[in-house]
Amino acid sequence: MATPSADHNHDYKHGAMDIQEQASTYSAFMGLTKWGSLAIVASLVALVVWFCTTAGFLPGFIGAVVVAVGGIVLLREKPSAH
Image (cartoon, rainbow, N blue to C red; front, side):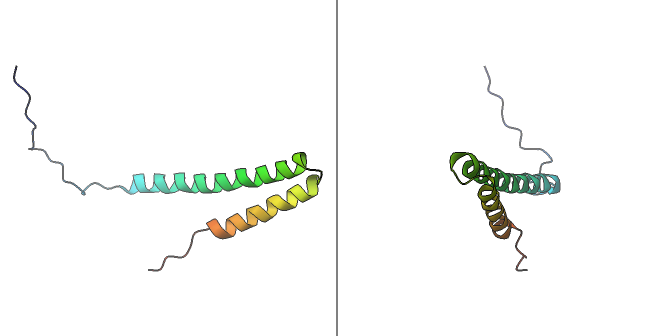
């Protein structure tokens, strides 16, 4: 039984494909992951302070706002150095 040989005569050229769609999909996924994680963390802070301590709703809400504002400041897009 003969083994098939690899055909190296094809039109593929490494690095020549347009990857704009893949790059924009990756960028969108990373943005959703980043901002979604911040929303989950802020929600968890609010719920934990509200229901798991005697502090109540207002301190939980204030804690969530502080976490959200800090996250927005830290996670926003930085201007490129170019």
